[in-house]
Every structure is written in C-alpha cells, then in structure tokens.
Image 1 (tube, rainbow, N blue to C red):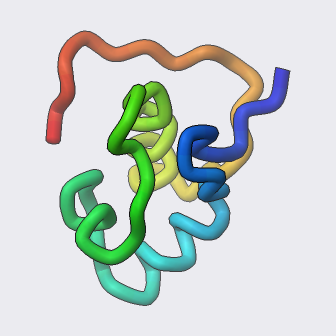
Image 2 (cartoon, rainbow, N blue to C red; image 1 turned 90 degrees about the vertical axis):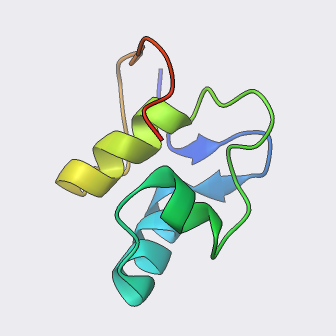
Length: 70
C-alpha cells in the first residue's frame, strides 16, 4: 500500500510539503490557510503531520492518531 496524498482533494503530500516550505506553515491549520486539503474525512491528517515533522511524503504503513491535534 502506498499513501501519498489527501484523496478527498487529490493533494499529494509532496505538493503540500512544497507549500509548507514556501509559506513556513508548520501545522495542519497553518497549511490549510494556504491550500485546500483534509477538510472531509481527515484521514490524511496524521500523514500530513508526519510530513510536516519529518519531510516524508510517501508512506507504506497506516498511521492512526487519537483525536485531532490541530
């Protein structure tokens, strides 16, 4: 399994990373101020958080989190 995007909005984590780098966004909320993603099912939020923390943009494991930290 390869997870590389917000499927609801078809935004790749690589594209989101570029926006974060360009704008200095370092949280889901700050990134959403610049690009639309993660507003429906929010299953991409744990991956977007990991992307913001580590720079990783392609995932091969399911990441689950309790609650929404942003």
